[in-house]
Every structure is written in structure tokens, then in C-alpha cells.
Image (tube, rainbow, N blue to C red; front, side, top):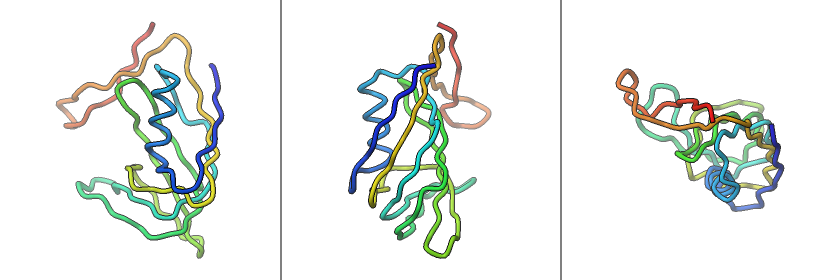
Length: 131
């Protein structure tokens, strides 16, 4: 596995910043290893929902996980407010960084992550291709 570390600065959109980094590095089979930082707001798709919800912050990022490949990313995030209440869901664009986002990614050697429509779920789902 090859690792990458980078920081996103205030006002950069978290998802867009990760997508741009993955595209620049041409990641074929990436994963989020860790992320700490904060958001001004969180825009998430909650479990089994079709609409996005926006939560006003600021928030601490308490977890970020997901896969990254040439066909796109699939990211889930949990954030905590100033009372320690945690909200989580599918990360979408619309999540600007508040102070920082320190991110470490891994790229798995010998694999490629592709996304193809799955008739069972109705979504583009991950297919792991051995290179």
C-alpha cells in the first residue's frame, strides 16, 4: 500500500477536495485511512433517504471512511457538534472546512475500484478488479 497525506484549508469543500486529490494522483483503488478536522456545516444523505439534509455547524470530524477510484468516491462521515451530539451519513458536496482537514489516504497495489450499476440496489456499486 502506498500512502498519501494532505491538508485541506478553510472554506474548501471536503468532498470536492478529496475528489480533486484522488484525480490528481490518479488513484485506482484508494481508501480513507484517517481524517481529523472541522466543518462549517455538514450536508449529508442519511440512511435510506433520497434527499440531502444540511446541518449548521461548526462540527468536529470524528470519523471519515470510504473508497476512492477513477469512477468516483463513496464516503461516509460522522461529525460532532459543540454538545457532543454526533450525526453521520453519506458525505456530499456542501461541507466547507472550518479550520482544517488533515487526511491520510491509502492506495491498494494491484487493484482497481470500478463502479457499475447494480440492479439489486439501484446504485453504482463497487467492483474490485485485480490488476
